[in-house]
Length: 282
Ligand code: AMP
Image (tube, rainbow, N blue to C red; front, side, top):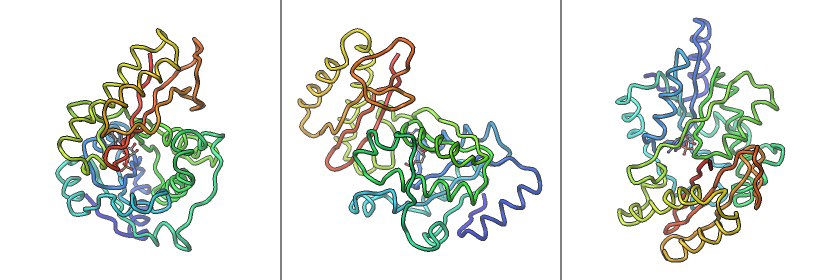
């Protein structure tokens, strides 16, 4: 596995590979790697000659300074993890100046309103930060295919919109959520949970599954009421939001139409750790 520590070494690598006609699959990450990230590489492996990943904790997408500061970082552990996995060919580990040569600030985007819903409303400026870093990474890595987790479903929708509006020559692929044994969506932030909190957090996926069972049986306001009752009985788990939204527009809805697809989205704070999850409703 090649370890590319700056823009120059990445660009040399990409140029060599492109000259040989290799198709590049790319999965960007913020490190603290786990099996959820491996599922992106596994998908990329099947459809490309090479798999490239990146590790960069992007400052412009954090709206909370403490969250940025507390974000787990252990580059050597990540490199060892990648090397042992054997899934990838190269990892790009840029410095801030490689991605933000002038100032560390976001561009401003419009993603057809997608950026205003859910995480966009809860974390103003977050998707401008994501868009800026992903656009820059795409321009540097020049992937044929790029892989993003459905765990961040809104982010995936926004990246699809970004690639389309900028006419970037990359195909965007969504990868299903990889879960811990108890159903908790795997996340770098889970490292900050105590064993008891981690065990209690299984309630999130259990509740999503219950909501799926209630969907099209009881009304959406009734589902929301039941979900908030479940969390009101668990004082360590603070429900930030639970929404049912159209999968395409991401607009929250209280009614459903037969020919549209819907998804439940949830954010729960457990002792200051913000846990996010979602489930397609069928
Ligand atoms: P992160 O390092 O958290 O920014 O995530 C990097 C990529 O991995 C994003 O596309 C995430 O959606 C994806 N990802 C993170 N956790 C999971 C998971 N449990 N299952 C599938 N994809 C994931």
